[in-house]
Image: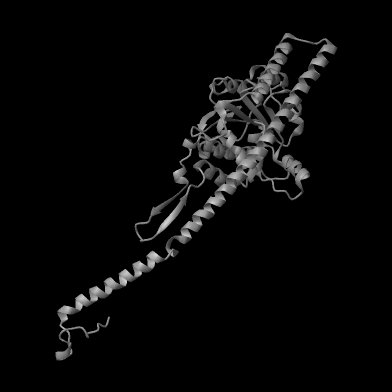
Length: 401
């Protein structure tokens, strides 16, 4: 920097400035320039105007999202109530038809009367729950449950003066994991959102490992056993999002595996080819007698049964009646939800076709190809329905979604 020497006391003598004076002039100039910049800064709003704009934009966006979320919840509640009405109506119609039929045939057994009475009581309890004001399950989040000061805040960045940022909370860890799983298995957004209901359930998978599971799936080079392994893998990944204790995996002809948290834990079981009969009834009975199925449990029990055949007795003979009695009379229908996922052998699983009309919290899902065709028939030939969608639907269908 060039320093003017006009004011130097030595200037008129030798036109040279004492070197000792130069730092003083440098300090004065630097100080003056800094003051000038500060004055300009005080007169200007440009420093912070952009951040204020961002805050206003964030406010508008957040309000808009909250309004949309409330509107979506409103529509979902209407849809849920409608589904409950349809479900209860069907249950009442089924019971009415059975009572009328048994009266006409004079074919009332004591067990039938007890079962029908229990079904009516359960329906009545469901109706009361719909109209009862339940303060324990409020959908409104109290203010003290949300840290409003953390939704958006300003902090100073130490590395760079003037660097401030507005920080916003992202999605929860659960939603992040769900989105990752949904992306990996191409599960659509609607099903992914509904999967959150699974945190209310203990998930159990019952795998049919009988001889017939070695059969090839129509149109593929995979066996039914291979398809079952894919189903279990996805169920484990989804289930462990909501339950760190994992899910229980049971088999018909080999040891069960409780609290599975990683797909690698079942690799060895699936490396052994399926062999044996189909003793669905005794294995399901053990599951239904577990602590998780009791009304006192803090969660419901969701049982996914993947099978390709009719239940058999210890001698290998088909015995559908024993399984039906178990489902109707021994299962806690109000706390134990069951979905049967069937293979492409419809003739062997035809016995399930009418059970969902007479049994509470029970449903049947066809094989993947059939379910995909059904969806595309109603939504269009090109409508996407991945294998991940199929498994998600199997998890949700028994719980009414």
